[in-house]
Image (tube, rainbow, N blue to C red; front, side, top):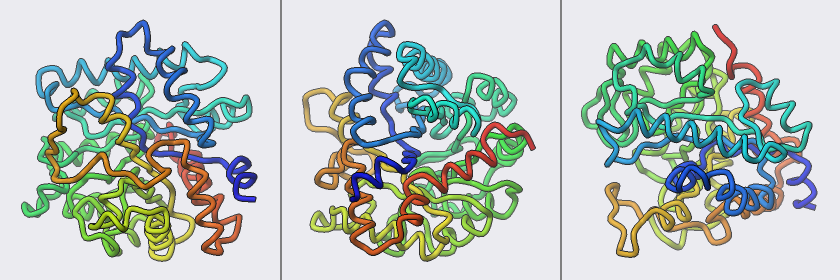
Length: 344
């Protein structure tokens, strides 16, 4: 039963760093590597809408950050052009609908922080023209736009450039992503935003007290503003202890967000890191800069193939099918239809 429901529903994954792995290859292999390595996983997992974040590793910053940003955006376009019957870059809700009607996976380009721009907010329209439709303005540390959640002790909101970035994104129709933003920055955004926001990969702080997760107050505010919180699957954000690295614990977070923000304001942002990290890390012991084990994964949910397990677990919890469809992708689709690529 759960397999039929999962296959029939629209499944939206709002955070998969696969572009990091694909773009690390020679450009001539981008389309084929995606086709051979990632496309089968997305198909088996029933993923219909895939947000592709552009994340810039520290060794590219600052001098090479813009070049790498453009390289990864080009990678997204090349892998789509090389697999025209399977995937399509989508800039608004209508294009997503058209892709899904043709049996394609809809790809949405996002920025995870903006090290390639720094304070040059005037470049946002350029990236918008290249297809970027979702963006955050900080990661773990400080940027010219805001502080990431790893700098919560500063109590800092958005800088003047950060405010300008939010306003420009709202003008363009680029959805603002609060994941990774510091607590004071989140409060600042929710105070001044005039359009709904998204948290592409954030779990519930009430269940796992980590600065990367969102408090109940933040969850309520996102929901009240019409936004969506997409729950992160990364095991270390779900539980402090390995015995909590389970699909049941993931469901706890999903249901908590649904209870607090509202059933119309929760989605899925898996953040499947294990394969990407193993793929990109040299054959030696990986060094974590965050203090988290990013290789730890929920059994069976270390990649897109495991997505049906979420549907199975939500059915076991007694959720109505209509509510499960909302969580799997319906809520994200509503937000994207209303906001994606639509100028203010």
